[in-house]
Amino acid sequence: MSATGDCFIVQSPNTAENTIIFGRNALDADALTEAQEVQYYNANVALEGKPDGGADVVKANGEILRMILQKTQTGIWGGDVGANDHNVCIAVSWSAEEPANDSDTLRSTDIVRLTLAIAKTAVDAVERIGNLVANHGSDNAKFSFVVCDTKEVWLVSSGAKLWAAHQVADGFLRLTNKGLSVKTAIDKSTDDLGDALKTLGLWDGEGDLNFASCFDAAETAEAEWSGEAPNGDGSYTLTSMFDTLRSAADSATSRSASVSVLTNGISCHWFTATPNASESVFKPFVFAPNPKISPLTKVPPDNTHTLLHKLHAQRKPNAVEDLKALEAACVEELNAYLAEHPNADEELDELMKDCVEAEVKFYR
Image (cartoon, rainbow, N blue to C red; front, side):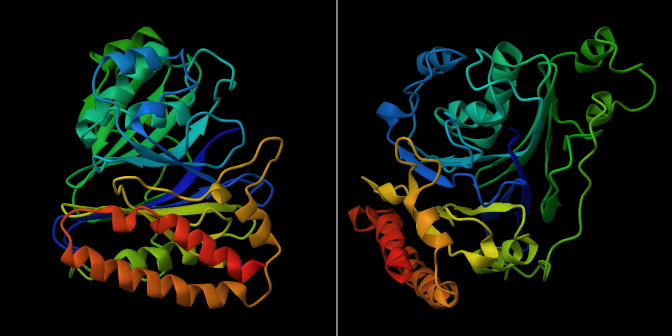
């Protein structure tokens, strides 16, 4: 099964100074029947359970970081979107011909987790993705990722163990889940990329090198924004992204949604952990000293759904509207905290756990 998402990226001058806001609707035809997991990993377990496919190499190459991951498939080791405690956020925007779960080669979701475990900047993450693709990737798989930190946004595409990356300029961008995102604008890549593509018979050397078209992949076009577009005056905020994702959500295909607000202060990551952003509420997570996010967002053994997902599916008609008032209050309270605190302290350890448990009370 592929990992795809409709991605929305907003940078200065549309956001507050030194703030990048990244939103994603995970997509699949089985949106209502698949897991919507969110899991937190301390550094000592971040790479646990993946002895092959580059995990040992990652362990040997630097400090292991804490991370939070969203998983929209049961039984996978990695995640389709996530962030680490150095303000790096990575998401899969499109993938095809993924290797099997038990393969020694890496899936796109494995690459997200392995990279978040060690990358301290977006540029570092781009290069580590490239190394994992080249050394542990599949000959057939095609992936595209979005990589962000507090300063930069990158698009990374790969195929045939080759990769190319493009740094996104200031502004805003919507990426649909239709194919490889890197085309002719290439800022980093496999060494001698053109020669490598010619050797494989994927490019004839004529004209501009278009990475996406070399793999006969449908090129991801810049799509129209959904809802009210950013207007360049710095007023686009977290709640603006909530509105954008809800406007773009499709009840038949939209799985869980996520938003990362990356800033020089305390970055915050919001997850619905339930399908369809227009019928779900976002819960916040920050890298406090000892975060707890609730066992309700993890699929229990021998199950295919989280308990939160099951209760959300059984909700009363007015539950979501009532919860949106709770969401708004949470945003207001957290914003007030962030305005007064340069660092996250233990007061935020159970932030997401408390929000999940408050949500569940509306469903019982």
